[in-house]
Length: 198
Image (cartoon, rainbow, N blue to C red; front, side, top):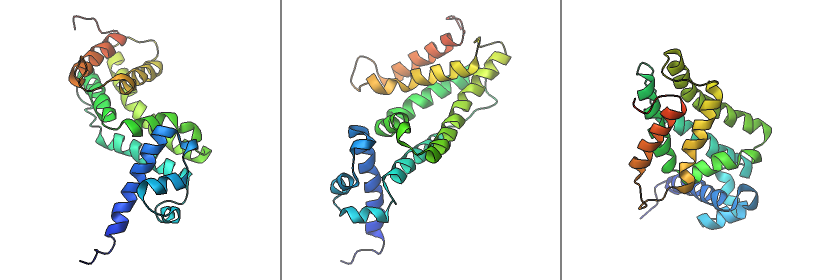
């Protein structure tokens, strides 16, 4: 049976990205060579350049596409109550990142390995996401529901707390992910000055 034209290319491209994601997360970007990625995919190293111009571009594409997917997947309920919006953000962040541990690790740990030009692009996307949470906090402060001295610091603190779930949560443990999500929603509210009886 003849191979459909383009089918090999369409399957190899995603394999290259998957292999790079896994290897970068396991070994670190600096320790991974294009030859290792090619071996993992099962192609000659020269074939990789059909899918990416170099390793830096591959890293950048992975990080950019991760951030774009994150922003695209988030549903911003701008007219909802700030408490409900915060709870939604917490749940979304935990669930989205839990399903993509390697991509999340790369997105946070490999910023240092981007070229200055690529760093600016990724940092802008990160700031766009951070602003989604900061706007929720600002809305809550304006409505006298949240009480924080600096909404930017509160935003960064909450994001660090939420992303940290990826470092310790394991399926089959004492708590389910839904249990963890609910506790983190409550902790986020307390961190913003909402009383326990709310």
